Image (tube, rainbow, N blue to C red; front, side):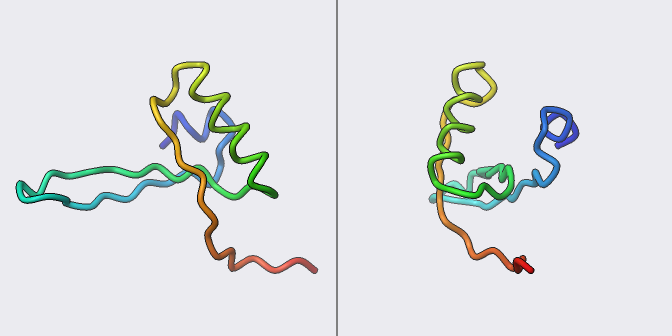
Length: 68
């Protein structure tokens, strides 16, 4: 997580879950919040082009932050 934070993702965190019959552990890395789908996708594409990630998924999540 420290490496991701140094790359400019201050809200990065991960979660782990056991999946399948063998209960294999899978990890998800969350990079933070983006103002739009397009900017999140561009961030994922940039990480993939640099070889930082093999795959990425952009999904909408509920953001508890409110704008004032």
